[in-house]
Length: 83
Image (cartoon, rainbow, N blue to C red; front, side, top):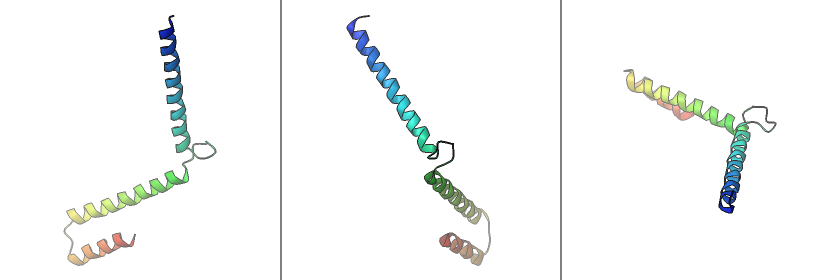
């Protein structure tokens, strides 16, 4: 093995180590502080926000596809504003 191939091998090992290190950091961020697989507070908030957005989209889809009266439409829009 020549000196060039040794340098390439060392660089390759360092790159693999760095990729694995970042991967484990990313896994740690998705788990709780104790690493037991529980979502962190930020993940819980994000899930809650996604759930609320899905509910809003469902209401908007229903508003567009249903042909209810104007009063019903205004009531549903006000409910969306109150959330």
